[in-house]
Amino acid sequence: MKFLIKKELEYTTLLKHLIVALSMALSLYLLLDIVLHGFFLGTDTISIAHTLYGNEAEYTEPIPLDSLLLQIHIDLFMSLVSFMLISSIYIRYFSHRTYTKILVHLLFVTGLLAPLSILIAYFTSPILIYIWLGSFLLSHIVAIFMSLKTIKKLLTL
Figure 1: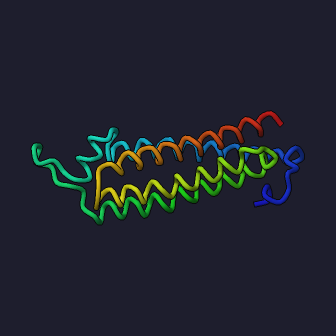
Figure 2: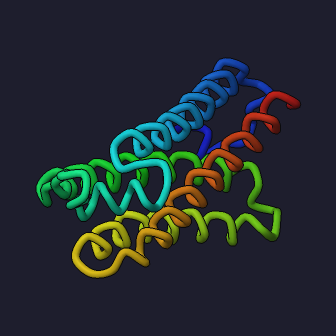
Figure 3: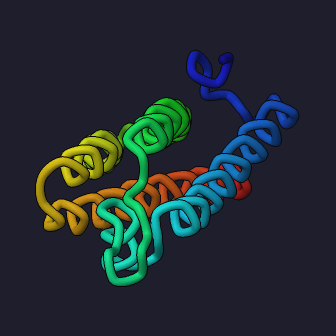
C-alpha cells in the first residue's frame, strides 16, 4: 500500500483515483451493512428484541445462537477490516488534526462494542440492545464521515 509510505499523490493520479474509489466502495459497504442489519435484526429496539428473544404473542421463536454467532463473526471481521482501511487512509491525510486520534479511537471502540453488546444482550438484558444500536450506528456514521472527508480532500488536490 504505497499511499501509506508516500503522501505524494499529486504526481500519481491513478493512485489518487484508486483511493477515492476504495473510500467510496467502503462507504457504500457501510451503508448497505446498516440496511442488512435492519433486515436481519430489525429497525427499532422492539423488533430487535423480538428477533433476539422471540415473541410468545406472535408465536415467533428467538434467533438461534449459532445464527447470531455467525452474524457476529462476519460483522467483526468485515467491519474491523473496513474500519482499519478507512482509518489508515484517514490518518495518512489528517494526522496533523487534533481530533484524528479521537475519531480513530471512537471508531474502533464502538466497532468492538457493537458485537459484544448484542451477544451479551442475547444472554442477559434487553437494555443492552440500546447500547448495541447506538454503538453500531455511531461506528458506521464515524467511518462514513472519515471516508467522505478523505474523498473530499483527495478530490480537491
